[in-house]
Length: 276
View 1 (cartoon, rainbow, N blue to C red):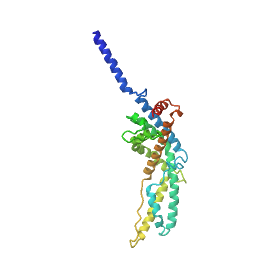
View 2: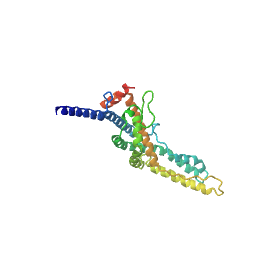
View 3: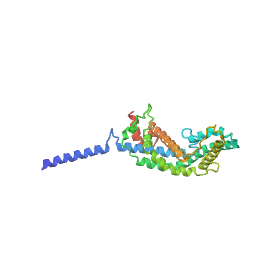
C-alpha cells in the first residue's frame, strides 16, 4: 500500500508539473501569458496615443501621412471641368465646384478629427477581445501566416499588422456610425461634408447632363454622372490613419520600452531587445 501511495505521489507531482509547464509555457522566464498581456498593453497605448493625436485640430488635415484626400470620383469631376465650360453659364458652375472641392478636403478631415475620439473605445474593445495565439512570433516581429516584418533595427509593426488583419473589417463597420455623424455636422464654413459633396455632385451631374444634351450630332464623348458613398470612403481612410499611428507607437515601444513606466511593457519588450 505504501508503494502504491508513493507511486501515486510521483504521478500527481508529475501531472502538476506538466500542467504548470503547458499552462505557463515559459521561455527564459517569460511566459506566453505575459507576452500576450504585453502586446495588448502596447496596442492599447498605441490606440490611446493615436486617437489623442488625430482628434486634435489638424490632427488629420496637417499630417500628410494620414490626411484624407478626395475620393476617386473627384478626379472624374476635375478631368471634365474644362468641358463644362462650354455650356451656358459653365464657367460659373466650374468655379463654384472647384471652390467647393477645396472646402470639402478640409471638411472631411475635420469630420475625421471629430470622430477620432469615438475610435478609442472601439479600438480598445478590439484589442481586449483580440485572440493572440502566436505571441512569440508577433513579439519577434513576424505576423503569423505572412513573411517577417522585421527590419534591421527591429522597427516591427507585427502587433499592429496583426490587429489590423484580424479586426479592420469589423472596426470599419462599427466606426462608420460616429464617422457618418461627424460628416453630417457643419464643422467648416457652416456646412457639413455631406452637404458639400451633395452640392458638388448635384451641380456636376446637372451640368454634365446639359453638356450631353447639347451634343446634337453625337460628336462629343458623354460625361458620366458621379455618385459615391463618401461616408464609406472617409471611414476607411480615417481607420487607415488610426492604424498607421498605432504602428508608430509600436515602433517607439520596441525601440525603447523603458520610457514607459509600465512593468509589463518593460518586461516583455525589454526581453526581446536583449535577444535580438
